[in-house]
Image 1 (tube, helix red, strand yellow):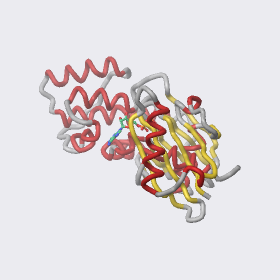
Image 2 (image 1 turned 90 degrees about the vertical axis):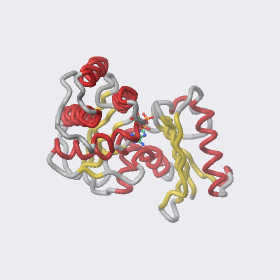
Image 3 (image 1 turned 45 degrees about the vertical axis):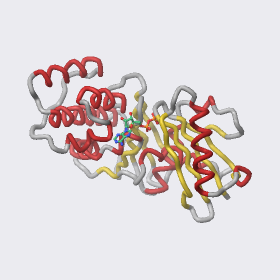
Length: 257
Ligand code: ADP
């Protein structure tokens, strides 16, 4: 059986084509969610189908998730991001107890029972601090691509944190640090420490256990993963392509009718 998982996120759309016989994904595609998310999704779908030489008629089921899931008009079930991220993470880490998912505009903590069942979750979608948006603003200020912030922060010479709890004030604080000649690497690390502190505060609202898995587009940032692990006093795991975990979970959940 072939299934499709579609995750229409606030920043990026992702598609995964999954084969339930081999229990592997055949291919995936990932692109910025532009002003017409459905056009982006159609383009991704065509890319994945043509690369894998699969026709649309061979797809048995599809599940769509993410911020823009209600926009999707074609035949598909919609499922929550919580269920899909959990299923995607459990594919790699069956015993996972806690998921930290940070996307472009929100962050979620999901607790599991160690056998794949979701127990509880906490979501922050009201405040940009602690989300990918904060890293995008930092990248713009430091004149560096968002994919380069991790490498920059890894060269930090001094541990700092930011005092501001709001991205608007944090931006002013970053401008102030730049004016004091604080090096970009130390500023990038300060932003990571600040995000890690916020995520840990969000986690304490729940009874969380280990192992902890970090996922979502922001989990591509290895230095932030390191800062989170340090703040929590334990190793944090991350799947190989953390940006597609939600779409992968959607494709897996599409197998069950
Ligand atoms: P959403 O599902 O909300 O669309 P994603 O899970 O795709 O969001 O995550 C988007 C965020 O991931 C961006 O805001 C950015 O901060 C971060 N990001 C994207 N690409 C990279 C990368 N190569 N390295 C580090 N962070 C990245």
